[in-house]
Length: 200
Image 1: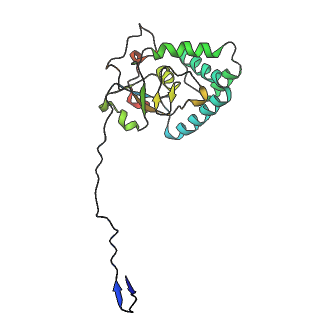
Image 2 (image 1 turned 90 degrees about the vertical axis):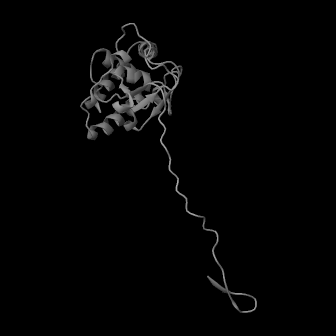
Image 3 (image 1 turned 180 degrees about the horizontal axis):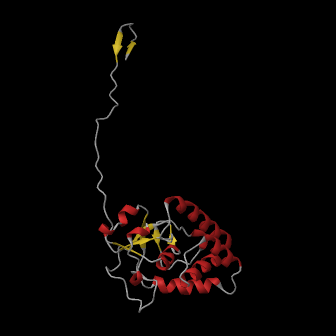
């Protein structure tokens, strides 16, 4: 760059503000502790069906609140797939106290998980079988997602349907034991995991 100084003579200015090039390499660290793959999607759900299914279910949870969650629990107890249309119809005619019902049923499933908080990992590649992740069954997945708070699983958090995110993910329990506590034969916990790789 050239400019004239006060005496009319040219002066060359050199740009010294460009820093030296540096290359940083980041190492990915895997959280220690038991890992569980979490999903409510039907086993045969294709990529094309996943987004509409999640969008519709989230809309029903916002619209019907705890009654929609009670409908999901009902479907799982009856061995049904979680169909949005069936969920909508059941939630709209729900009778009784859905909050007590949901809290009781999901509480039984949550008791089969490691104690303490969990950390959600949305990168599903981190939950592959090679990383030691276990596939939770659908009932166990609902128990985890019902107490999701951002990137954390908070077992003591009150269930608030409007905050529930149903997207498939992995939850890691950094402070939990390698083996989950026994549920005394209760179905729907870690002991009844679905090991089929084709579920995703």
